[in-house]
Image: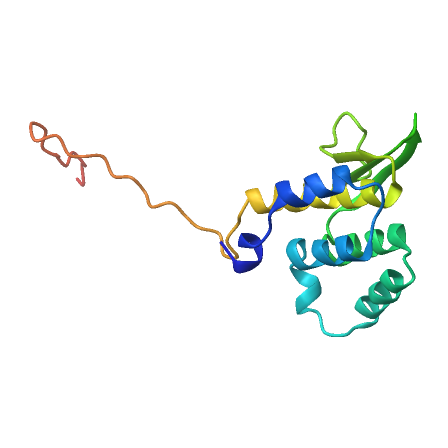
Length: 159
């Protein structure tokens, strides 16, 4: 397991997001520090500078969307909906599939940015659970144990 995944503590961050009334600068910086693997390794590119400006401006929903774009390039926002006082956010790998075929990750919160960040952390936890090596592994072939009472016999007819 990499150091980035070892330092990630999803229950603690998820619990903090669930109980928080709104996003704060320290909360956003904790999420970046503990849940982001790509952001610290990116040099000061235009997108990282833009994220810093969004955090400074306290544009939390835009910052959460940009953070998802940087950290989860395969995942896309499938749905953002407001219903009965809560924001519902769904992230998906296959956004064009019908709802009943898609395995979207969904989160909800009274604050839009916290709903987005909760879905982000759920996807990160899902990715941390499924650790994949960079090179596919092949299982060695299992050879049957030879029976001592049986002897192999060649029965080819070469004539």
